[in-house]
Length: 85
Image (cartoon, rainbow, N blue to C red; front, side, top):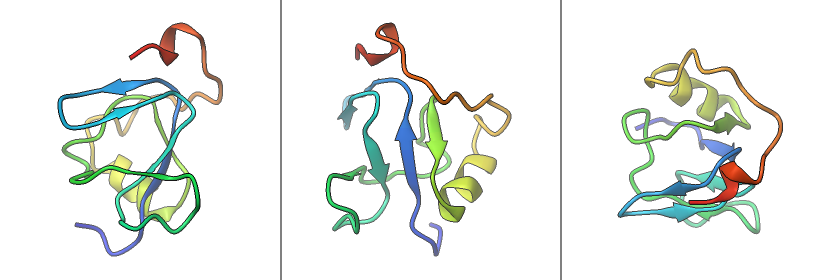
């Protein structure tokens, strides 16, 4: 677990058995979320994160760097196809 809060903006939808988020959502690993509108992902870690997660803070950057998506190019746009999950 990381000491810092991790916040990510999603550039694509995530649909897993435990979570379902839309492209554009901001997800965090802390509950309650400190920013209104953020979505909580219980168990979010470098091992469980998905592609298309753009780090918004230092905790998220650290988490992504330790994940299988460390070298993923960070997109700043969302397409309609990526919004379907």
